[in-house]
Image (cartoon, rainbow, N blue to C red; front, side):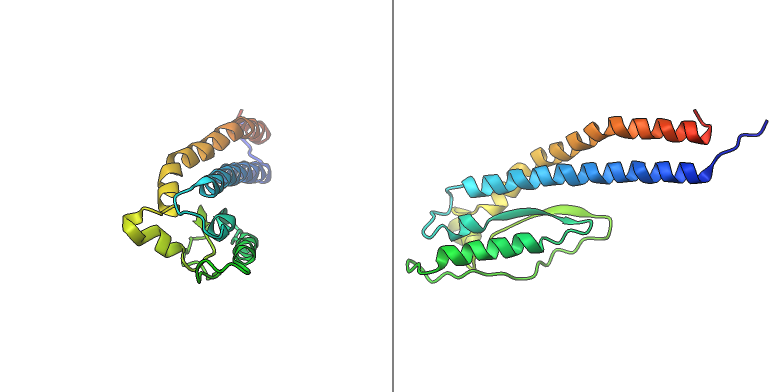
Length: 172
């Protein structure tokens, strides 16, 4: 008796498997972005004259249909609000297009601030007031672990889907 496989059920099951995998990656990256943003907002490295940089820090997932436009708008508005009426320095709120370009299948976390002096904070005095670079460097492994944990948690449901696909296709 020849083995018969229902291709539609097999492809539908594989599509569900890929959706579960994709959702787990998004979940882990979002957890990582939340961690990075919390760390950025907790830093005291830059001195906080106006509070604008701290208020404007954002870390968000990009790729897979996400471009961070809402986060950028809220970060810019936070910097603008904190700098409104502030006379301690001449800094301004700044929003500019990201130069980060991802391939269609790539995703990542973008961490930034929306003040025109953030680059100066990162590089001046040998990086003594840097926050973005050290935070990203310090959180790379924990973020990777969060994505891995989300994938591991999703693996159980993916195994269930794979079993169902195998049963539907006559392979199990």
